[in-house]
Image 1 (tube, one colour):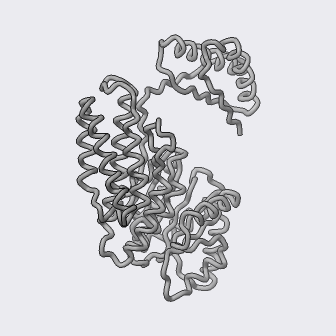
Image 2 (tube, helix red, strand yellow):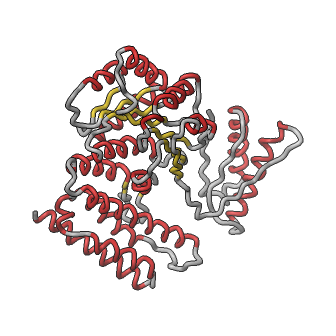
Length: 404
């Protein structure tokens, strides 16, 4: 109890330090944000969710590490302000969720899964000189997902948003919230290697709060159980899911009225994926189940959803918009000969670096898109040669290569 009390007092102290910093720099928006957080935190909550509030305290404390100019015209301050809003929203989602599940039948189970989701999604920096807390963007749209009233969800977000890791947690919480009326959740991944990685990852985070299964035959056996006490998550390739559906049909086991489906990386279409979509479109619409299917991709194909539109399925879009606080400048290169593509890309890159070095443009990142592994390797080799000649100007340049 003394330990928890110390954490609560430490939380108040960190908030007070941040308030002093914001008052000193006349950051009125930040003062309002931190006051909103302070009003919602109680000693009882800290005692119940001690590990989570340790992360929150560390995150708030690190916000004091911004050493830039508190000027609305300053680009770095704009980024900082946006980050403060992100932290505030993350904390508010945690507090609002705990309030929402209070008194529910599976309150403890939902809290346990959400704690794991929060720990996975909310990472304050270990370096005390850094202010940024890494937050999965998908975590911050938890209630956008939870409050959706659609049969099929088009979830569009960029790579690295956390959608693949967070989705099973969100659906498991939903299952408990509905008192396990829909206990089954199936998520597809393009291949076995990815599935094996996800099983290891989910096992570490979920613990024993859910059942994880990758064998269609074993998964099917759970449908025969009368007393299901926790969500049952299946991780399958599209082909394995078709095996499950086929076996269920042969044994006259109804699965579509008790299962929610999530098809990840839906843009990676093959014959198996298209057949899965066809089977879902054929069997799911009659039940009109909320959040019955979720399609996830950074580049979704709208033609997929037309199959469901014919059956009166209600579609909803869950779009994670990336905020680009720094301006993004697209440079399209036109060349007379494809052999000149690499030279032009290198020439433009060096020009941009020179402008950054001479303060003619903001410092930032350069991303080169082109086709062909060999061309990428050629550009990489040319850049290394050119950068050696510009060594005095480009001491802070880092060259990354991704060629698939």
